[in-house]
Amino acid sequence: MNNNKFNFDEIVNRRNTHSVKWDKCESDDIIPMWIADMDFKAAPCIIDALKQRLEHGVFGYANVPEEFYDSIINWFERRHNWKIDRNWIEYTTGVVPAIDAVLRAVTSPGENVVVLTPIYNCFFTCIESNNCNVVEVPLTFNNDYSYSIDYDALDKALNDDNTHTLLFCNPHNPAGRVWTKDEMLNVNDLCIKHGVTVISDEIHCEMVMPGHDYTPFATISQEAQNNCITCGSPSKSFNIAGLQAAFIVSNNPDTKAKINKALIDNQVCAINPFGLEAFMAAYNHGENWILEFNEYICGNFQLMRDMMNKELPAFHITPIEGSYLAWIDVTPTGMTSAQVTQKILDDGKVLVNDGAMYGKAGDGFIRINLATQRSVVEEATHRIIKAMK
Ligand SMILES: Cc1ncc(COP(=O)(O)O)c(C=O)c1O
Image 1 (spheres, rainbow, N blue to C red):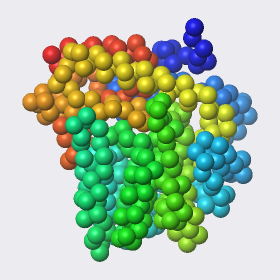
Image 2 (cartoon, rainbow, N blue to C red):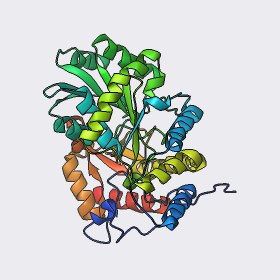
Image 3 (cartoon, rainbow, N blue to C red):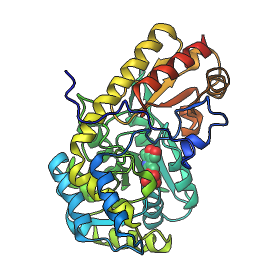
């Protein structure tokens, strides 16, 4: 018997809705599995909150109420055992604007910012837009196609007078890792040793596969909490990214004041009224939805992995611990990831991401967005197998 409350199998036609993901398809026979947004309707609690706001009919500038802060505080305490003080929180329009402003607040032009690659492409643009240098520390790619942190390489990169910041991603896009407390303690020890501040992007934190646990970086130790700035949002996990609302947490009043100034300087210090309602509805009422979502994605991943393992042994699939993004080493095909991406598009009519956009360590990989209906995942996987065989 199926006890699920939400119907993730329901096909939602997103063509002609001004969707970045779907509009990129040059013909109607292409399945888009690239940019990280979902093809599912948002949770009913979010749709209801938005309907109510819409019915009001007036959409002027919004004030951010205390309930916004409460929704973050209650969610993270209840779900992740993180006690956030109201005064530690700033709000902004998105996690990328958050990272950009935090970098503006804590770095000076010309400094190095370390990232663990492959990594979400906007990390590079945020660092560069703040006139800082990207220092890539490749993750170790293990025999089972999973990733781990190369602490020696990280130690070396942090041991530089020009390096004061690590831009971290927990869970990690696109490597699929949900970092453990011990791994983050090791990272934090190295950062403390070298006087390096951690900016932790935790936007993927609710999307964690059964059997894995997300730990906020700020909760691993008091020392870590004092040394890190967290950027987050329910946007990615609840498919409300287009509504643009996010938060930043820092327990250091001086740092927080600098971040506040940077948000104002960058003109990203307001939230639209729909973003606000969706954000609060997700954190106040969205728990059951996200738990079912995670199970559904796990099923999507298993389906794709099993089909590919059987028919396409030249694709080496990274285990997925968090997010809904499959990460695949395609180097055994003898083709570049750009060529594979193109072939999958030309011959299979499936649009995926070339891993090269996630740094040098992503070259040779492709990324596939699995946040779509099971039947679509099955059809797309058939097509990819056919195109690559
Ligand atoms: C790690 C990470 N951070 C931030 C974002 C985007 O955040 P936003 O849309 O809130 O700017 C993404 C989107 O995929 C992401 O993967």
